[in-house]
Every structure is written in structure tokens, then in C-alpha cells.
Length: 178
Image: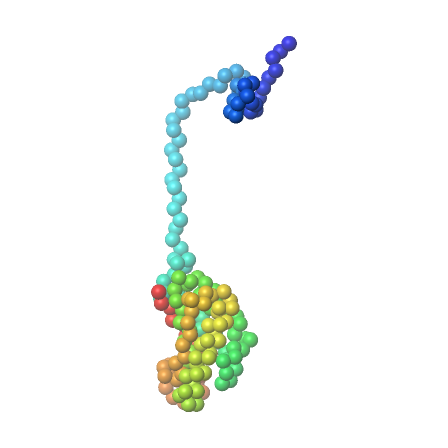
């Protein structure tokens, strides 16, 4: 009678013990033969390329915010800090930029035109900056990475009282710092 064939299985030894012994391995074509082969040359280690867009500079972030805000402004209700619904897509874009620039601190700056009293414009610009800050926080921007400040009409972009000049001075800007 042929002895029982065992194939790679773990069985306990006959003696009571906590150790295990592997049975002998049987190869179908007899014992394996090994031939010396030259060592394979290892493949070069791939390093990740640095994606500049993944780690932007403060200057690049500020430029991206400025470009977005110059192409599509945040619109507020007249003499109010209430952001109009048409500004949602702009806020979504700004939040996307802010998420890419999450290593930096963002300062939302509110500006008004020169119509009205200095104190009213300062308060209105602060409330508008806070409204944008809140909108970005609601879109996932960390509260400790974003601040808001109103400047009233103290930093006009354009002098004059024409409708165009007044409209240009009513704005939100975002500065970026480390």
C-alpha cells in the first residue's frame, strides 16, 4: 500500500506541544533545481513631480482670487449685506480657490462707494466682508483661516462720483498671507 501523500499543510506533531511542524514538501517532477541568474536591475524609483497648482504661493492665490472677483463680482442687495443669489457660483469658485490655498490666511476686505456717511459705509463694508466670510465658512473653509474687515470708502479704486466710479469702488477683495 502506497504511503499517504501530503501536500503543504500544517499539522501538529505527534508529541503534545504548542509548536507546529510543516510536513515535507513533495514536488511533482522530483526535487527542484535552481540555476544561478544574474540579479535583476531594479527599476528606477519614481518620484512624484511637484505640482505647483497643488501647493500654490500666497501671490498665486491672491492673483487667482483677484481674477475671479474681477470677472464676476459678488452682488449685494442695495445698502445691505445680503448676498444676492446670482453670486452663489462666484462664492463656490472662491471656496474652491480657498481650499487649494488652505495653508494660508485669507482676509476678506469690504469696500463701499462714497455715498453715505463715513460711519455707515464703514459698518456696511464690515457687514459685507463678514457675509462673504460666513458664506465661505459654510462652503467648508476653516474658520481660523479667514477673517473679515471693512474699509468703508477709505480705499477707492477710482475717484469721482460717476455711476461707473461708484460701482468700481463697491467691491470685495481677498488678500492672502502666510
